[in-house]
Image (cartoon, rainbow, N blue to C red; front, side):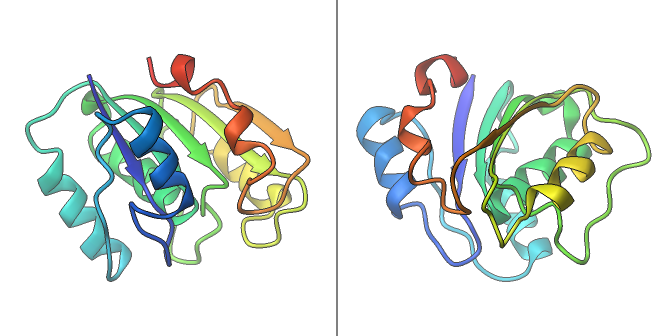
Length: 155
């Protein structure tokens, strides 16, 4: 099993969430991405080309990236943990066939960047059986991020 953290659009693997994972889960990869969605997905594909049973934590745009990768390579992905995923990105559409990859989605009820009223229905059009948790938080999930059972989610 291989674990990765995919950061948001304007963040890095050394942002708040990335530093948390570095401290508590030092074996987790936290690569940096830049450029368009296509450029980021190409870099991700290269990084994980020889890996199996991926567990990917994707925050915002990183959640969109993780979802796109799982759609293209479902056999490679064991589980997705999506934190306020940017499924409302203008250029993205749900797949024709529901994705059976295990998915845990956490989103803040006060999120104005990836509003739950847009993202939750899109996640239900994307995943066969998403485990969706709406928390009393905003887009950054700073109030709820640290209280998630990361040991269990990443196992």
